[in-house]
Length: 312
Ligand SMILES: [Zn+2]
Image (cartoon, rainbow, N blue to C red; front, side, top):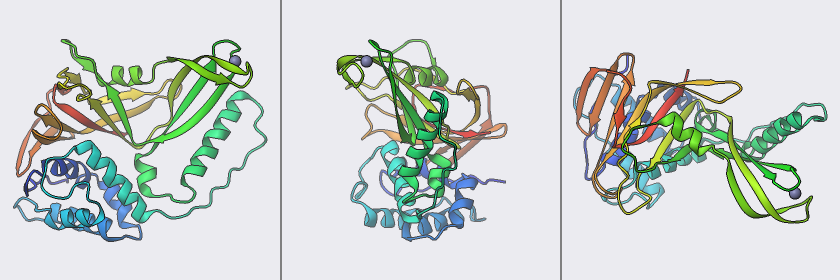
């Protein structure tokens, strides 16, 4: 059974503590990293995860992990407040770079004939191009793939682009009513009209429609809310259902595993906390303190900044 433990704030490190609470308790991530050929950051992360799950009841001190991070990058050096989202994206990428290995990907296929076959073939080809030189369990667990379809509004011809992603960066409008994360994701994937894009068939700039879809769903889905795009924080309440389904043709079921909240007016001040959800309990973690209570319905919060969903 997962134990939850506070993490000491060693000087504005709440942004890191909130992230590590979510990662130390991800047993699938820990197990997969144990099987890799590790370097300094991954090794120290696993050491601290081991301490986190030890029988010691005192809060965990991550000073040694912070020192390793400071050796790898100057982004988070010193003891200033930082952005949790920037930190988790950096961290997953840094671990990926430490453990990545070359892999041989062979695409066995018949010549793709239909539009659908060609699309699937090109999505695999793009995935192969992206990762054959460096693949890791971080890719397996956290990377998804977008399909970006551009269609010319004059001649109807279509072109596709495939891009990997780790986080869905979701826009938020200032609203009085709460908005559901699933609606935010739908909005994110909405059709968009673009002007002045060159069409190879029309041989001139035409109006295009862009449609983003998720082609590959990651095992662990990270979503973030753009609460700070303007000078003021967007305080719209977000509903984070405990279970969601995404994707149209083949729905993917996800369950909520954790939330990182940001309290305050901008990302470089204020305070970060996290909430972990396990079975019928939620564990609210605020640096050293741990508070466990029964889950009462879907969380709604005007401070929710990052949410983690796990594929079920
Ligand atoms: Zn055209």
